Length: 381
Ligand code: 0WD
Ligand code: CA
Image 1 (cartoon, helix red, strand yellow):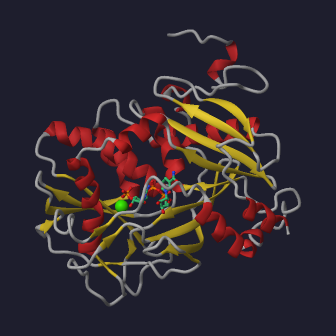
Image 2 (cartoon, helix red, strand yellow):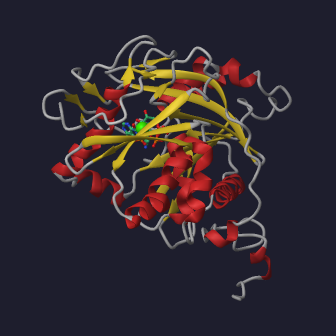
Image 3 (tube, protein in one colour):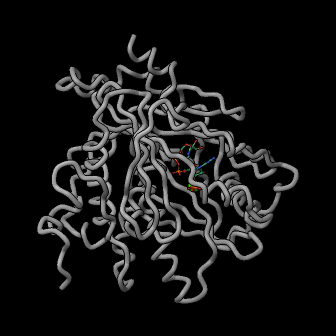
């Protein structure tokens, strides 16, 4: 039995009474009942074309075409001659999502007539799904820290990631092998997706990672109303498929599993990230292409997102969904308690490094500003 530093620590992960200055990330502190997480509802979608232009529609939606059981897809094909890579040095922050909000204000506002007076959008938080995935996995992450910038505007808190020094160094010093392996995931999408409902995949085409289809969902975690967007790989085509997001499919590639140790590592590390990413927007199934060392997909595996928590229970000392969700809920409460001033030019920068608490700094009119003037002007009008 370990004595807590303060009597309140047992119940409150914030280290001080009143306005907390840090938030602990120890997994034991978040082992409570699973918090309320409402079924995410799709409120819209948008597309980014091959030049990264925004369209308020589903033109980039793709359709899943089930491959043979032993497909032998060569994921290395086209890497040198049919690949157009998005420039990941360009930071787009929340811009595309903000464009979607401006084009669809009514869709969001109409959903919440009761509290529209204080919050222009009627939601507490706006962010990318990928940022929330990082928050969810924080209690179990031991390698990569994060920086999340938060600003309040019109009563809503916007959260946008800032690249850490470590992530930037990694990005700028990737090996040729790593660069190529990042392509494999996109190539797998090309082998399994068609552009039309009744189409077939075209593995001879160009892979262009500028193209994207994104869903926008609304949901609630405990007392936090969330609006976030995430990139969706494809949807199923059956006539009796449920409405989005339940018809969506997440595609993944992973090294084939040959030993018990590999299986254990897959459950402990990879399934945590896969679960968090798909659970958040309510994507029910994940299709994995299992590949060998040379980038050839040798088998396919379908994983139901809702079955993952059962799958991992056999693993000793494994991660728990409830810890992820309770931590996320407490982190959002912490952000709400810190981000008091309603000013799009004021950024509260939340920082976390493995084995540390979450802390924050405050910045006015700095490099961290991320809510663009065009958005402020338009939303105020
Ligand atoms: O500005 C930023 N810091 C970020 C922007 C970080 C992460 C994503 N983005 C952009 C993406 O380009 C995308 O258009 O936001 C959009 C959607 O993001 P998300 O769905 O919230 O991100 P996440 O869940 O991390 O990734 C979903 C998919 C990935 O699938 P896999 O199976 O690999 O997890 O989006 C793709 C990728 O296919 N993706 C990206 N594509 C291009 N550039 C990037 C990226 N930086 N990150 C993820
Ligand atoms: Ca994917």
